[in-house]
Image 1 (cartoon, helix red, strand yellow):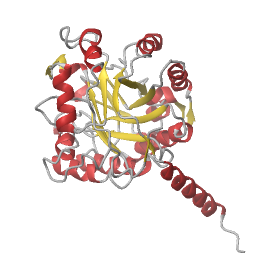
Image 2 (cartoon, helix red, strand yellow; image 1 turned 180 degrees about the vertical axis):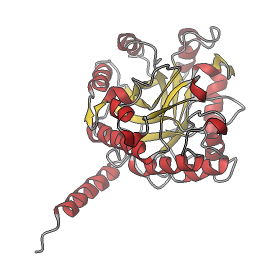
Image 3 (cartoon, helix red, strand yellow; image 1 turned 90 degrees about the horizontal axis):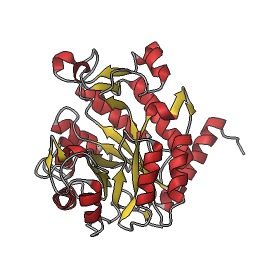
Image 4 (tube, one colour; image 1 turned 180 degrees about the horizontal axis):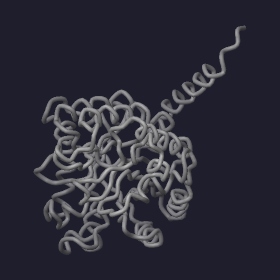
Length: 352
């Protein structure tokens, strides 16, 4: 028998493993999760996790982890922070799961460091690695419209998948929002265009889940230049079985991505794609409004069709109805619904 080249053999082994994982189904535990505040310490997060240990209505937590914290040098990954959260969740008396938002930007930052790995800042191929948001008034974001930077983000997700795809505690990953907040056209960096950014997100969608076929990845698709580009991007998520989501839940107001997946601009993706959404502080007494938990949950369920809803553990905005202990948690104890049906793009969901 003719021996296959090593590269071809390795590819066939990987394809067989991917098909086997697909047959096992995607981890599927939809419902309500707590979004832990980025400004709190890990010790504070662990106390928050202890508080939900016996709350059956809460499926788990979402944490935000900066790219810099995981990739310490090019291709060298430190998973210790993530592993600590997994260990903490496994110590609880009831099963809770972990969702990670991989942060490629830092809002309000005055320094470029601590966001993306240092090599992205220094190697000329990455053109500085990050760019100021809103003319330098809002922080810094990775240059995701450029292929070399997106190549490294894809590599990060592949590393995360290789380590955590088979880990039952790790439920899903979410990206940051698709909009880069670069301000008016006159302030856009050289080489940037909305079409270039959308094309790189399509590359990401085709590659991110290759090493995590049993784990959801939600692209937080809020805006990418126009509704037509967003429609193209959301359609591209179907074949690679990606999920879609957004970082704000604002009753009566749909982002570009939410318009697309709810069928306002054409096809309706509810039930086809897995859908996640966050309730963040801006709609809990901030600039997006002061809504009650019921208003937010009803909009997420009835209009957005969410499977996963991540509630900011808000302790600072709004009144008693918007605060975690006096408003959100008591409401979640009433078991408000989310859409629990397995998305048709997944085919098989693993609910064990």
